[in-house]
Structure formats: structure tokens, C-alpha cells
Length: 437
View (spheres, rainbow, N blue to C red):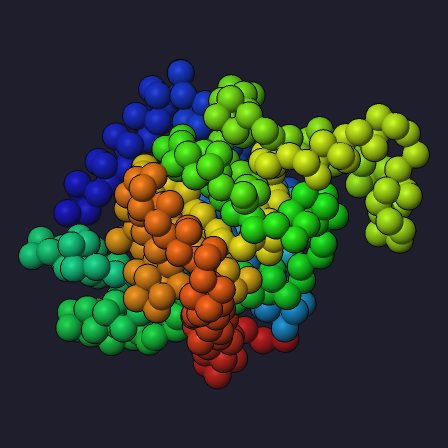
């Protein structure tokens, strides 16, 4: 099986090289790994004490942040190195101040793994949610470096639990401890004689709660929403936007659209289906160049042109967010939230929405996401398959304050009862003396 694994790694890398000739992400994957070891050698002093976190991509990075930040605070003498498999994760982390070193993970060959682990010499390794790179993990285990897996989730159909999955189950034995998200994962592991595991929960709850706690006002959004019923749609795709447009044009609500893809073509398409709209980029300078936090925005604006722009914002029905990095704050301004992706391969992050105590609506492809299933069961989320169902659900919530409040409270309570995963991990590290100050 190891021969097949090694062959797969080489074929996979070869495939990326071939695809990189026309695929931008594949080219980033290749280019990001050029001179990887030489760059690391420049950043690492032999005296450095290093903790290594590995995240597959941007989503796993968000899950890792609460633990990274808590360890940074408790063990300041260590350098934190964060590695990524995908370009999207690496790009998302480039300006992250709590990581001392950001790097790609080299392809999982025995030679690469040995060089990587022996170069950084980590005292603790934390993998976030998944990715089980045999050579990197086995080299670390050979050097007796403690390995933790956090926020993991397992399903019966995974390779670990197939009759031919012994090789992959053995990879799980390399970890000192596996923290799983749910009871089903715990039962599944123990049924397969993997006992070094416990119910840790999902660190994303800690992450979104911290973001909400640190919320700061976006004056432009406050001016746009006012006292109106407002739908905030995050990470939307075309089919999400089409059914939302059908609803908004016939109802007295405002809508904030933060599309998954912010391209010139997509923004133009949004301007077509939401004709009564303004773009965030048109108006943000009003709030960056005026003292709007100290006085009334109307009094702070000096020119007629700026006043006309502000009036356009207040009168518009749709605000298109054509800038990055705002989504986690936008949901604060919603009466009801809508999370996109449910008509594609699957919905995006619902926790960023419900942490503010707002009900969430999404498309039909949600069943592989535990939090979405839980939210529906708790009455905090609702799935729709077409424009008609969206209208029925939106009308019901907006016309019944008691139901709207009930759904919002269920959303907030769901986050509250599921926080605490980070502290469970930190307590394990401290109790087992995996790090020293």
C-alpha cells in the first residue's frame, strides 16, 4: 500500500505541473513551493523553539486561529509556523500577525518530509481538521514529536474504515491525541480500536464568537440599512442571487449581497438583476475621508457630490459588496441572513451568520455540513429549493416577529453551547506538558 501511496503522490504532483500550464491555481501551487527549503532556512534560527500548525486551506486556517492565538499568548517564547497545502490558504494567511512563519507544505515524499521536519524541528505539531500526509507524520512520530489533530470529523465512507483501509488507519495511530467535532466521529474511531481520541468540539465556534465580540461598526452599512428589514446574503452564487432578486423586487426589504466571486463580470451581472443598487466601492471613501464617527455623517460631508452619493446609498434597495474582508461583520446588520453555495457543491460558512443571533436561509445542498443540519433541527436555519419556497419562508419570518425572534435566539444559543473547543485543546497540552515556557 505504501508503494501505491508514493506512486499517487508522484502522479498527483506531475498532474499539477501539467495543469499549471493553463490553470492559475495549479501554477500558484507550483510557484509557491519553489525554493521552499531555502526560504525556511533564512527564517529559522537553530535556537528557535517552533510549534507547527498545518491547515489544508483557508477554511481550516480559520479553525486553527483560536488555538494559534491562545498558544501564542500562553507560550510567547515559541515561534509559530503555519503550513498550507492550497494557495488559497497561503494567500489568506500572508498578513496574519500571530504566525511567525507562513509556508507551503512540500509534496509528501519521504525525502521532502524528512528535510522539512528536521529543518524546523517542531516541539509540537497540530493538524487542523484533516489531511493525513503519511511521510510528514511518520517522520515526526519517528522523532517523538507530539502530534495533535483538532476539529476532526469522520464518516463511515472514509478510507480509514474500509476493509482495505489498514494503511490509512495506521496513520491515525501516529497522533498523540485526536480531538473530534461530534459524537458520531468518536464512536466510529473507538469502534475501530482508535482510543486516543476525545470529543473536543469545533474551534470555529470559538473563532466566530471572538469575531463577533470584537465587532466594530461599519458606518456605511448602518446608513444603508437604517431601520429597514434587511437580508444579508454572503458567499452567493448565481442561482442564489436569482431567487433573491425575485424576492427583493416585490418586497419592501433591503439586501446586502457579498458574492463568492468578486469579478468585474459578476458585479456587472449583479447590477443587472438588482437594478436599484449601489456598490460598496463607490461609497466607502465617504466614510474613510470624513469624520463620521464623531459627528452626523450629513454634517461631516462637505461637497454636494458627496451628499448626492450618500442620498443614493440611503435610497438604494441593494448594496453590492465588491470588496474583500467584510463578510464576518456584514451579518450583524441583517434581519435575516442567507448563505450561498446551496445550489452548487455545498453551502458556505453558516456560523459567521448565526453568531449574531440571526436566522439563516440556504439552498438544498447542506446535508454534509453538521452545523447546517443542527441549525435546521434547532429551528435556527431553513433550506429552500426555489423562489417560491424562499418567498414563503422569508414572508413568514418577516411578518411574524415572534417567529423571527425565536429563530434568532436559537441561532445564538447554538453558538453559545458549542464554544469551548479551544480550551479543551489547551488544557490537554498543559496537562501533558507538551510545551514548556
